[in-house]
Length: 218
Ligand code: HEC
Ligand code: HEC
Image (cartoon, rainbow, N blue to C red; front, side, top):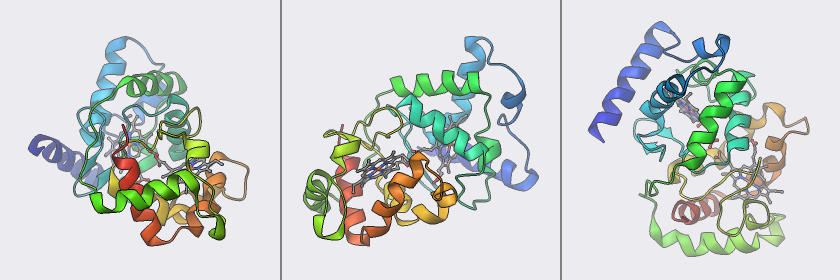
């Protein structure tokens, strides 16, 4: 753990202070070459997203990428580059995530294959309430069952992301701030627009319960 946070702090210090693309945007102009290039790029991603892509909860929360569908991973990398997804962080998200299409596909395929244990650290007393919402929705609040799209085990499919094993605090924040961070395209018919009304109708307690539940799914 010490190693991750140290390398991470170093990385953000560099990016924050100088605004340099530490391996990010150079990939945008070069075609994805040898397997060595892909491995080097994945190493770079893992500096922030955890040594097994399992995510990380520290100074910033890093989402789990391991086991995520490759289509969703590619879509999000594109959304960062096109400025449709931003968090107003001191990290330049579009630069950090800037990869050319071939590299994007290669890196996404690798992360989809990984299957480390979940990062953990969610409050376990909320999971039962979360399971109920996940499987049945909240009909009186117009909230559909999450399982209808994300699958009974939360493993996702295609452009619908895997939620299983996702870091608790990341899911909480994502659902709490959907319109601000990912709503840039909510007027358009994008995959992000699907989640906007759902996220808006969830209460903070419901969000915490669902986030706790899915964080423990395998
Ligand atoms: C400097 C740290 C840093 C580096 C390096 C980095 N990321 Fe990220 N990444 C983040 C942060 C922070 C987020 C969370 C953004 C948010 O909260 O919306 C994120 C989010 C993502 C997401 C969205 C995940 C989801 O569940 O929606 C994907 C996909 C992603 N990164 C892929 C990559 C890939 C691939 C690389 C390597 C090319 C990479 N990242 C390198 C910090 C980093
Ligand atoms: C109609 C289908 C559908 C339903 C129902 C649905 N989702 Fe989603 N969800 C999506 C799609 C599509 C995305 C990807 C959005 C994007 O590409 O930005 C998504 C994204 C998400 C994300 C972001 C994941 C990440 O890694 O950042 C979370 C969290 C999420 N959904 C939670 C839920 C919860 C909780 C429910 C139930 C209350 C739910 N979803 C119901 C389709 C759905």
